[in-house]
Amino acid sequence: MCFTIEIHLTRRAIEERFKVDTSALYDFDFDYFYRAFSNPFIPVIAQEDSSRVQLMQWGLIPAWCRDREEAERIRKGTYNARSETLHEKPSFKEPLSRGRCLIIAGGFFEWQLVNEVKIPWYISLKNGAPFVFAGLCDSWRDPLDGEISRSCSIITTEANPLMEKIHNTRKRMPVILKREREREWISGEPSLLKRKQLFQPFNESDLKAYTVMPHLSANNADPSDPRMIKPYEQFFPGKLF
Image (cartoon, rainbow, N blue to C red; front, side):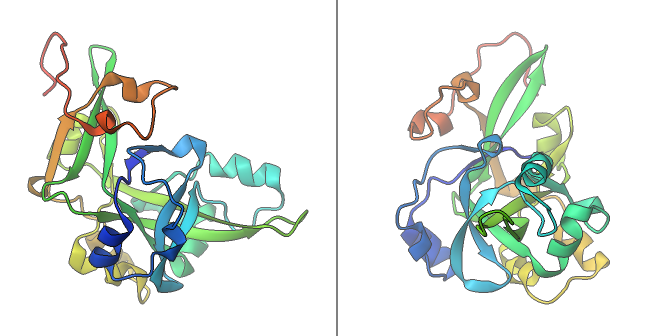
């Protein structure tokens, strides 16, 4: 599962890394955390136009939703999409064909359960570079006012050995695409075999992970506070690993 991500990047870093137009990010707040449950707008490179970044709401609303009530109900179950069942779920079958995307991030958070206490961890690339999650996106038109909503979902897969220890309840992790496979995901139409290859758990040796302050979990945590991603030693009886 993946419900909290970090995007404290710069437009220049994104432009240099992905070679895309970032004008949509002119007023974007590059914060230290974004929680899926607040349906934030996050930066996405979509299959339909891979030359630019778009802002889409986290929590996919499929195009076939009949009204706002149904759209918001379905969105609550589409923050993540399990890689193993994308082709089976009604919300993801169409986006898998025409709505594949890259969701830009600098890191993400998971919680480890230790003696009934949830310990937050921050995970990023070892080299500190921006990266992308494999994602799906779709457009929905509200029949009442004609407003078009663009939204997305992060694809998840089985955890690698590092993430098994951190996310020790569900043992899942987001699909982080290797740099050489990013364009492969949003071009063409990958077969089931190709998708399985793309969705392999990211190599743990290329990741770094450490515990962060428990206040990250609080409702009043400040997304602009840099302490949210600073290492924080957990004074807790027993071993975290």
